[in-house]
Image (cartoon, rainbow, N blue to C red; front, side, top):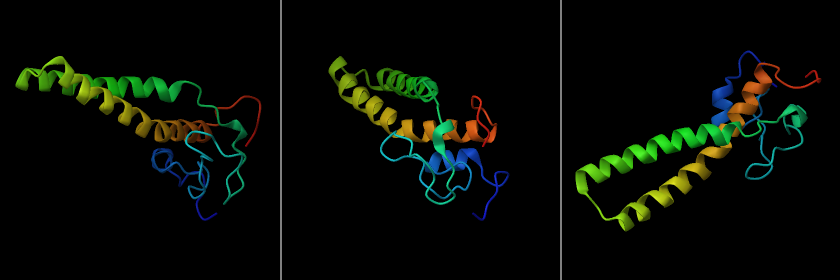
Length: 122
């Protein structure tokens, strides 16, 4: 473990979905399932509970992006409704599924950084 808690950027390890303490081990065991512990530094991830936070942030980010782009496309090209559906439904799904793991990992890393857990010391 070459880095300490002060040297690990929670946003960097969040985007990379890495351990919030060492920045090396994988945070997820599957798509969104948090691993039991870090394979590098041994940090127990039992404290990790991001709740619905990542989904809320993604709703705002993706909603803003997709609605903005849909408005721009509609103003410039005036496409029929089925073109909007063909463009924006897949774009929304792809963005949501792509952004969910990094957002969840970032919230877990911030939770670790700020010692925001119930009744357990790290």
